[in-house]
Length: 222
Image 1 (cartoon, rainbow, N blue to C red):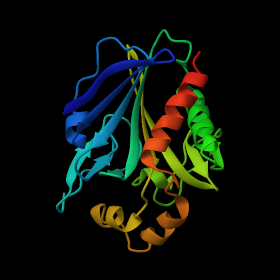
Image 2 (tube, one colour):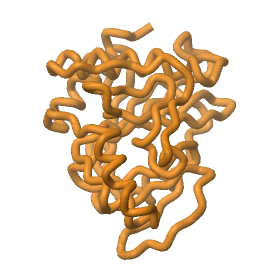
Image 3 (cartoon, rainbow, N blue to C red):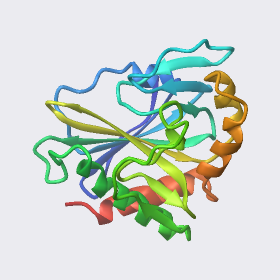
Image 4 (spheres, rainbow, N blue to C red):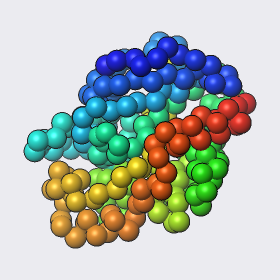
């Protein structure tokens, strides 16, 4: 995994860029101490990233990777998503004991970022909304802090906690093609039509989404 640039300060946050496979990124150990950090990931190969509790699936020509946070599977690859890992230390004012509420501030950041790009983004504030495929596919369900655009999910967020703090793993859709993930997970063929209605690729370039997110994050710095 290559670090594309040294860390730089962005309104109190350290920002770094890394380039590598999903396995390399998820295989990195977490730091013993967290600081406010945003890690923007450029993934080099297509991979299906499973949630921590999902059963394994055959690769069928695509790398299968397991993350240590919950939720359903996400298909990543060059140009598929904006991938942002957000680290918050346990003694930070942004850290929240309530696991559900802990997503809210980050959802507000994403909502503000996408609205600045002219998108009608909303951060979900209720309990988990589950559909027929939400246990298998991340973008088939809607959790606290996650983002919809025009009523369809566009940003998924998973959380992993340690004594050091919280790691929020964010995926903002740039491409939404349900058929490959349906095939990889061996779901019924009709799931593709359902999934097509549940999620939405952002009508924005990945670089613009990244810049808007970093700008909104600075504006919401505690």
